[in-house]
Length: 419
Image (cartoon, helix red, strand yellow):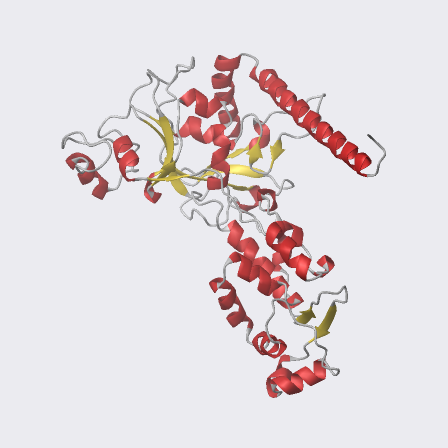
């Protein structure tokens, strides 16, 4: 009978919500769920540019969107709200800012120190921060950065943590060296509590038993809140000039690719041993049918960093039940319990592991292991998996063409050109 394996971050007391048989975890694309957990996000470069301009954007239900400079902060502090309002709006226009709060209050709030504004953003919900960001170019610069950092903070929660792909066949007391703290040893010897799942009558417990009972299940897919519907409703009541808000598309429908740039070299890094793996050494090469890359930042089609983590971090006391023709000791992964992350090559020596003084490139060694495992399973695995990826591309293109034809026909019918 095949064992069930579950990727875990023991020191975080977390495990993936769904595990499975080892061959499924390695060969079905399952390992891609580790990207959002282990990849260290890269913030867009333009977030680091200094924004000094404080400009107030008044938005009405007309197309007349006017930008009014607030003047120097020193001068604004010396004036009361009415004087400032007279200076900036001589004709006392009746346009209301967005959201609908008195203009004088908006101006009073805007002269507070930047540190106070940042603290306010920290207390707001995503929608509230978005509304505040739309009130001025100054707040847009600050709010956009705040929201993107908030999204980025949801990624890479396991980066730098000890990782193990734990099998249910692990015996009591058998765990990777240094993974189990001394305080856990006592718990494992005493066994689980009577009301816990896996309780076996007061006997000792294995690390797998402990994980099933006390680790929190997490999803490998990180979802970002979408502001598209909020903006659509807002834009219906207030005609908003989108050009005033650079980068707004990335907030309305945020994509993970914002934080995983494809123009940089990504690596899998072992912070425990000081080793790293470059994807270009083992990733599938483009084929003639579709000469496009299979590498999209840390996401690699076919065989990627996630598969490398699983094959090197698997841990069980027996090789029985792996369900694979590969017979070497894959169940005793040499990286089981090690601290791992996915990051860019230029951040290799970023100080995440001060204990590492010299890094070793083990890409070729890993590529040979991949070739051994995948060849046993598929034979000529590069052509086999490449063909599967091409079939998926054909299907995606077919669906896109069919949808385009449907929309074109719908438009022609609406114009009376088709019955």
